[in-house]
Length: 450
Image (cartoon, rainbow, N blue to C red; front, side, top):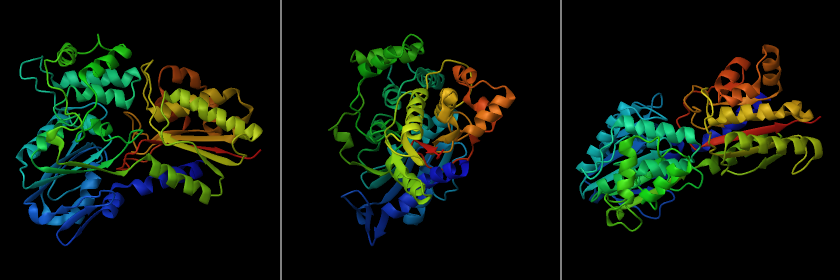
């Protein structure tokens, strides 16, 4: 069953591999550059220089494929990606930085990319390669010109840590981060003006909105400083924010700082954002593989959100109903879904949202007679679930039996948010290493016959 689960998961990665997406989408015929899904085109005779910038876990792999397409037309650039996700590039600098919490390399990467943007002129085409993870990988605290306290990297790190632990959604986290940044919320695109900007985007967020992916580096931002403060208030972290961050947000709310570029901003007139891949494509491919294996398959949604442990209860309820009553489908059956859940930290353990979901599934299944027929995998598409070396975890009868023999109590580890330790001991971790793509998460549930 684990082999079947992993094959279904891996099939979901194939259509969203960055190299495949770039090669199939970007083409040059004569002097014309085209991108599938974009109605426009670029006449390269009017371009003196192409600069390539980017941020995200998939950005280096995207750049490698783009380099193959454009060759020596590329005049330079810089890419920020997560440590271990880099590639060897000829004309583009690759900087591996911290994720999910920014580090000094994140600051260095932001400075390098800002430099390339400021050097761009009307004869430059800037191609941006953007994927999930870009928010942490670029750390450039907002320059307030003395109108509010200046942030430093430690302030940015603390804000990120507070938001990660709060249970805030990625959209909410990014709203706050945009308003503390020199590059997020469309500010990077504004730095590129008057050059043209063509941005190729791989989405890891539910809804696939360019203003949310990697905190909207090249997209107009509809949110405000007031929205950001409302979010920190909602999750009870405003008082815990570093004083400089809190006072900066308050200054922006009170009109003492300029807002992020809004829809219709003139500085964004030459910006074109093109979505190349998302969780929907991964989910469709996973479904096709499950069906090829002979599993009647029910695909729930590519937009599953909420607390990971609560989503686990939904999968368990569906699995139990299918196994017991044939509700929605009859066993044998495969149920799959995707999206991006959240975790509210309650303990001091280690793990990620997918490992937490799998552990919650295992914990809640203890009292179900159908437990032996349910085989569940929750995994990230980027190969790293939270700050761990695991991609996700299996929740199946084998893990349950090993845990019982070892005297491991799933509930104890769940209460501490210590899913990694539990599955490491019980043998349920999935480790793939970096996949070099990132379109959110996939969950696969197999329900066997009696």
